Length: 524
Image (cartoon, rainbow, N blue to C red; front, side, top):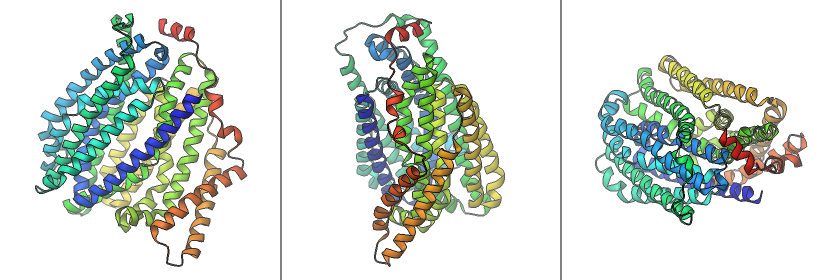
């Protein structure tokens, strides 16, 4: 119980800290290389993320689930055997991913992305893929056993080294233009992956240095490999298909803007502003919600494996409630202060306008992310794969036909159509699997009403009080916390939040599974 609270605090603070640093660094890059450079970088990283997520996503989920389900929390020998097998599996994924990115960079850059300037950065990024796969295995183990300090430390090392190297070499690389600026960023990213892997391996060695050479006999049994592949392959395939189609979507956006009448330079700039500048800011607060869903995966996986239906239902209910309430609040904050945020962060009126237009999309995106993670925890990864394919195909078709005609308005239409469709079908599957119902009144209507009243009141008060002498930054610092406090006040008044909701962890984690039950599951 106490351990969960500590982990929740760690993951909240570190997620906010890392993402704050990440957003600040992105602002630094946007000022250095401009909107066109950010757009070019976003194209490169869309292909890179397709490769690296194929390697890390499936094996990370597989290790987390299997350690939680089979009782590896209390058996170092079993966990050690799992990790050794998982690293072997990760290398089987890393080799084709590396070959695809390194040897196919020329074809990808020229034929897929339509820009020769992406070839060199792609080759450099390929070097870090195998190291990311090993890190994913070890981080999956630490998440499963509820130890967040080691993976957090590895992530901190990765972030610090990446920023330090990029800042140190960026001015030199920028002399060659946007292509070499992206190459400098790729160098820093690849080296940081290596550093994170070395840090993870060191922390893992300290974890097991006192266990000697003892390895569980499951290392020599084929069923452990089958279980790893059964979980990791669908998740990795889902990630590959989803990110592959997402990459196609990203490539089609600048091309669609060109067909709409923009030049190549302006098309890349528009793409960079939306995908490389505005969307990362809107997704910044999601780190806390995603972090909590990561903590819930081993608990829900274990409860589902042991057929503890009530515990699964309670956990899923609270996860959905928390996501809806918090994401609607975040959308309200962005909608209320979008113009000011655009000026403070990027000194851009256009970025502020885009934040306001896209702010209502936040609850859909955040809820979809959490529902996708919950489906994986409930062994529904094949369904998640199917839904991701359907969603991506719909977006690609809409971008192909709507964007060239409507331009920016068409792209926004694609965002909302895809978000509504994907969230609806994924949520329907989750509710059907758990036997739950979506509480529209308390999870949607009351929070929307509360954030609307809070936002209107705070913005009106600031307009009256500022009288032109308060800066945008001060208005945000005063207004955002005030909006949050009013929001939760209205939720309590409307009966949407109760004391039980604020102490829901007690009801979720009070029935730890017995070791005998875990062993029985593993034998089956």
